[in-house]
Amino acid sequence: MPDQPHQPFLYVVVCASGVAPGVGALITAAQRRRWDVGVIATPLAMNFIDVAAVEAMTGHPIRSAWRRPGEPRPLPDPDAVAVAPATFNTINKWAAGISDTLALGILCEAYGAGVPTAVLPCLSAAQAAHPAYRRSLDVLREMGVRVGGRAPEGAASGGFPWEEALDLLDIPR
Image 1 (cartoon, rainbow, N blue to C red):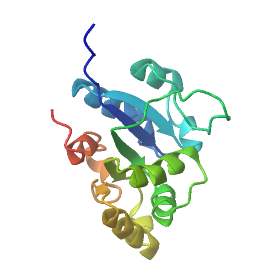
Image 2: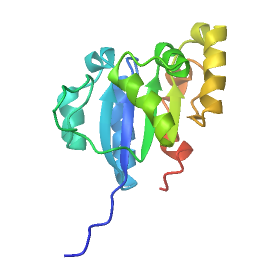
Image 3: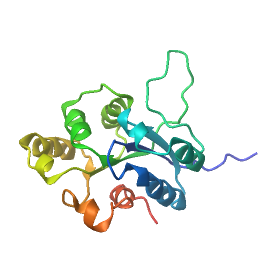
């Protein structure tokens, strides 16, 4: 039997944000572009998303916590990572190399593994004005992370730009 063609795998990292319940739009868009999708949620994001609905969409369990030694890996290695929505906290910790959650650990490892990564920040204008945020974006860009998103609070006026993450990753339509 011939080998099946490899279906690329996208990790979608979801942070606790008011737009997080809409992550299904990104999952659906990636699947339309012929990507398999697995979701990694920050612990707080688990309270913002419909876990059962997302797992039904992807066919994979949502990962939020480290697995125990000896447990099988529930998701394959990613071919790309999209962080959407990305909060002030996650962006700053990621840029600093802090790996205190599974989501941050995966983001820190993605850099070392050379996995293409895109981030769509979602934060207030007051948070974006903090100098640590600007420095963190500079660090992420230096790491090759593709940064997108509208101006802070832009999601409220025109909807969150979910598909921009796929465009930043050059995932063809």
